[in-house]
Amino acid sequence: MLSALLFCCNFALAEKPLSIGSKRFTEAYILGELVQQMAARGGPSEHKPGLGNTAILYAALRAGSIDAYPEYTGTIAREILKLEGNPSIALLNSELKPLGLAISVSFGFDNSYALGVREVIAARYEIRNISDLVKHPGLKLGLSPEFLARRDGWPGMSRTYGLAGMSPYGLEHGIAYEALAAGRIEAVDLYSTDAKIVRHQIRVLTDDKQYFPRYEAVLLHRIEAPLRYPLQWKGITALQDSLDNAGMIRLNAAVELEGRSFAQAAALHLDAVKGATPRPPAQETSGFATQLFGPDLWRLTGEHLLLVFGSLVAAILVGLPLGVAAARMPRLTQPIFAVMGVVQTVPSLALLAFLISLTHSIGLLPAMIALFLYALLPIVRNTHTGLVNVGRGVGHAALALGLSEKDKLFFIELPIALPTILSGIKTSAVINVGTATIAAFIGAGGYGERIAAGLAINDTSLLLAGAIPAAILALAIQYFFEWLEKRAIPTH
Image 1 (cartoon, rainbow, N blue to C red):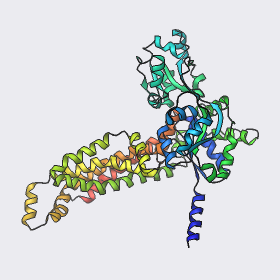
Image 2: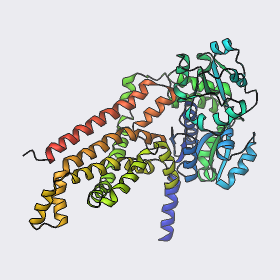
Image 3: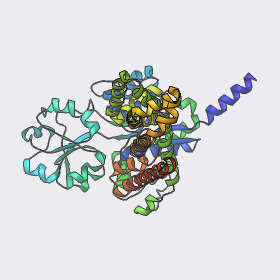
Image 4: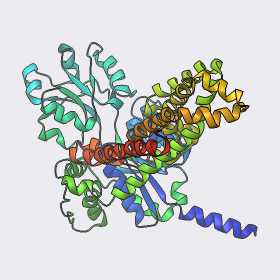
């Protein structure tokens, strides 16, 4: 019996696919597709795209929720290991080993951070180096949120170059180029392999104080992954030194300028890896209707419904008793609402990052917990309000009839408070439909997958293909609860 159980466990373990994560920008999506498609030649593999920033991917990797993801040596050194300078991959591996992590594949190109200024502005003010920005403190900078917060981003760079007097705007990388072209900003942070640098006539400023480290693109993985998935890893190792900067720019351009999907862009390079003549895939139809009613629509709808109603049911089961407690025991009212209020103020991505570390997983579990927490306040508040507004005379009459406190609550007070309680549940459900879109940033799926991908490549149609179904679902839920109120609440 024991041997049979061990065999089943080993079989289940072997069947678990190699899980590849990726960050939320064009190049990361493409590299994730490259790794997954090469791994799939040897065995089961999956790609969990658009999982947010370094902190979320690193937490997911440490927790074992993913096995590997494309990263950059400068980010590993500065953000993960807190090392200065340009440490070699060998040194990085020695520092990563105690963490159970390793680097074993280098893609072959370096994608450094840089600052770029519109060519017309750079020529007007004679700006060639980053240090030249000191003379123009009024220049409008639009920097990505991650760059603004990173240890190797704006905080350190502004100190090194004396730019503390400048006040940059926070702007998603996917829309920064269009904002630059429209003249709303005059300088941006960029990646040296961005496909839009030439198209938008941007001058890449020289890092004359050599602030930025090298950012060699590598595969960061759990140390046991090559041994656990030897067949998949054999395919992945074929990507070693297979891409140069020009090649990566070409793949980025395939998505951002030609409208190809991330998988199609990856296929452009995979033919070259196999040694065959490259066969560019057919241009993908990127019309709005095609994206809206794409083959993933029903999968995303099912995932979104599970996120919304799974968390809502849990919030009802916990929120109703808390609301009753707040109404029945006034000394608990303020503490309960204080805790609920604090939960509401925690930024969603920060809460998700914390829950990944707490649950040692990404995907459905931390997303459901976050949505459950956000759904509590309206339910607790409306349950409390509904019960408090029940007239005291009703309670006295119930007691005069010989009803117990329990019977008075379930047969008198809760039915009278039901319209207010249902209103709170409806509010939580509708809010959760919108909030659930962030679940895609940690691999939980839903309509947020389209929204995250649309943000990454500034594709308005793809954004709308995720936002419109979410809006329709929110309206449908609202109408459902209004119908439920009419059916459940007597009108006479």
